[in-house]
Length: 298
Image (cartoon, rainbow, N blue to C red; front, side, top):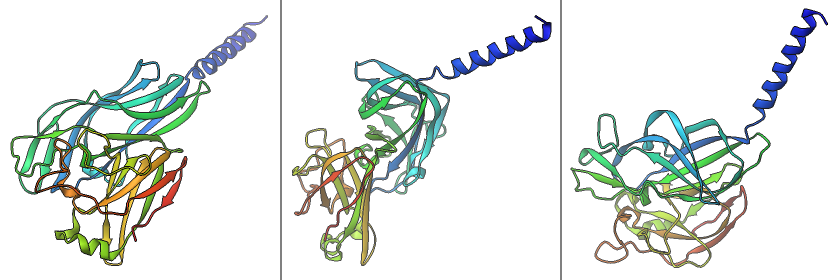
């Protein structure tokens, strides 16, 4: 056997080994992060992110660390997606929980900070960051690529305290779904409903989604039934609309409130002079995998 033949065989073996090793990844994943903004005088919401942790159905965890910490203004991604994780390997298995890993650095120059039109820059404290949000996600051992959508509902996450100048609290409330399975529901709201709300600038008019059918709606206060998503009603006379996105498939109750600007996840808003009440006429909607349904409040 000649030296040339030996070299060819060695090259072929190296190529084969490279192909074999390249196929060892069970899956690859991209993750995007977006935010639903609250009905507050919020201009910026900066958070520092270290990575993402996924929980398997056996209780074990897999953490994906970012190469470099990212400081993200969540208000920039109200209606658009921030690429948080790109083409990361992920082991085969079933995952039932996910969380974003934040650094609790209260520093308005380089750390977590809220900027409001009322009180300017306010240091931001992150609480409950070790809590997982529900996820229904299966990774196969075939090297397939996946995209996960993460959405933080700031109405259910950020303390609503317009008088605070020393700090605000953030308790991240996420919902997550594979992009191919994520469902949405949108629709119109009749003019007379908006008019009857009789609110300045209509800033509190919102549609809430609750997990399950025929749920009696309530505010977000840590006690069942907590809403799983909210969306502001926006537009103008004759064209009032809402959209709830990144919803896992399932049954939901939709309810409309005129007082979404009173929502504060750190207190019970369902009683007192500033109670958060809902209008009669809640709707049930069933969402299949990847569905985009319409449900109008007319």
